[in-house]
Length: 447
Image (tube, rainbow, N blue to C red; front, side, top):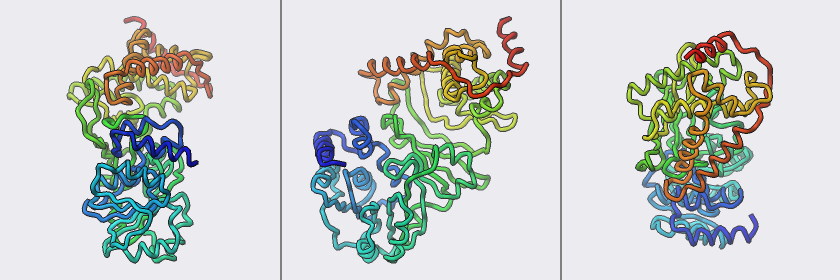
């Protein structure tokens, strides 16, 4: 990052009212990638994924603009942040100015530390030797890097890597942090939560390294990107006596905003595809799966399940003959079964259109596809417009964290949806729909 950009970020941090690790003010202030990364809600996700001792005396080497420092200061007893660049050091001080737990300087203190966090650029043999000598008997060192070559430097300094965690897409702003075993034990889930290979590493060393990442945990992943802080969540993938579970919780439990909120949920892990995946491979099943999903939704509503708003096709696994809902975190107090059905069909059409679904009408639009899918379960094609307005209102609240002053955002989101509805669906393969679809269409037409 050039000097001018660094000064700009430092000025921004000096003026910010909310400098917390989940500050919406900072998260949405970045103009480009170089600004967004250090200000992102997820800048501390790698450390959020670890079990950090609350009473820890922490040393951070290479504090940058203070994204990790801020989080460490919120959860640890004492933090000494080292940053040699004076502009960045000033940024760290601005970002932690309301925390009495944080000290910022340009050199290593002669203290004992329970936890040391080191950025790759500072992980020299001499520094690591000093860190090891100052580590408490139960302490741990976390090195954040993009290169496995750092492990050799650690070993030369007397710090063997006890845990190697993969960070996707990188350690700067991680969506997922995982051990390597999940890739072989639960490959379908691993692919879903990472979105591809990870470019970052968190190397855990020292006698206390094992406690930072419990043996029963396979991965931790986050929804912190295009969400306001009240809607950010983390999910831990853990082993259980019966296999594995995903345990999801809000990062900052908050009251609903205009009836919109996120809540905790726990799902057993099944090795099964989502409805969207099945429809891409077996488009002839569309009528049966849509009907089954609608019936599942009604059944869950009769059980007074709170998170119906999230019970949409991409959150439904097709486990043989059983449909299993997963990832039900969003709540919408203003939506019942009819509204969720409309939402589910709209979002399903969008995902199928993106994938070039082979069963879509040749040369047709996404709106045509959404209307046709709706007809299969008894909706009039005109439902699309009301579903778009409802989705835009929901998305505006989820991304802004407020219902006040969001009209412009809502209109912009609605316009994006209308543009997507107008796009032509380009089919990627040709598959003849089964007789079941036609039979269902005839049945709907008779109603």
